[in-house]
Length: 351
Image (tube, rainbow, N blue to C red; front, side, top):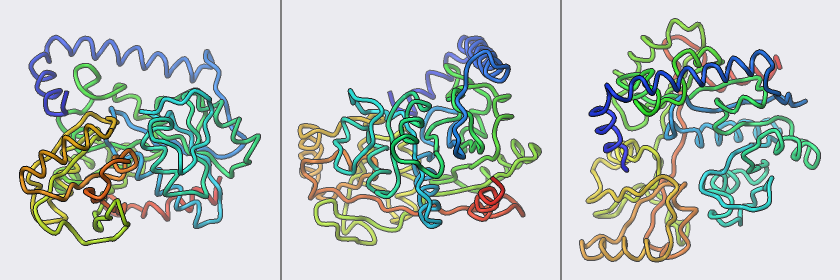
């Protein structure tokens, strides 16, 4: 089911789904309360912990934010350990320390992206983050931990709780808990956040900024805007960098919010792809899938296929046809707030 199809059926069944969503939000609120009151055990690591997570399901930019935090740490000569569930992976031995040569089908696409971009950092896959953290401490002694998709993972205490939101979360999707919408918890869960990061990639920034002020401006917590700025394309076969497609191109995505990628691509290259091939999030890109896409593109006279880095790590066959989006995460403060990197620096000095 595509993002658009999900939205359509949620709208049509809204009156039926709303009570179910409210009930689910109450269950999640009770769960959070139980953790706060000590009814469930929580592990406090002897090192600082930064969580980067969502209030909604996927597609808010956690992987780029985690990548930014790892880069920030490396600039300070720190060695972080990123703890992640590893969606899309099927490893048997846990915890799994992700090696840059690990098959994406074993460790998951997003962990592999981070391991390749940050070979000096630790990327550990395990649904039980506390177990992964204790394992990393015993063997590698990291300076701090990063919890990927950690907002709902309450079994591990965190020192910094970064909550990522998209424009939809602040607009029509506000406080619409699944299955009525995409939120995992009700709006009261945002009280746990230390700061908010709003992804404005591929959307009109004006309305998102106004919605950020209206929804988050009175929380007393820092609000940062960020976007993924496309810097060019990398040839997946030989690593050559180009500013954009040489001719007509197709966009191939297997991500949570494909329309955001399409908007960013259109903005960066000044033209839309001839076709956008939308696959399910974390979809396997095996030889038959690649051959099918390349065959259809060839019949359309298209030889360049553009994809994200998350998809690129899964492509072993037909790499010469693919161009990978190279992006940079650009931050912007809401109104007169601090710059995100400076804010993170000050937090680290205090911790």
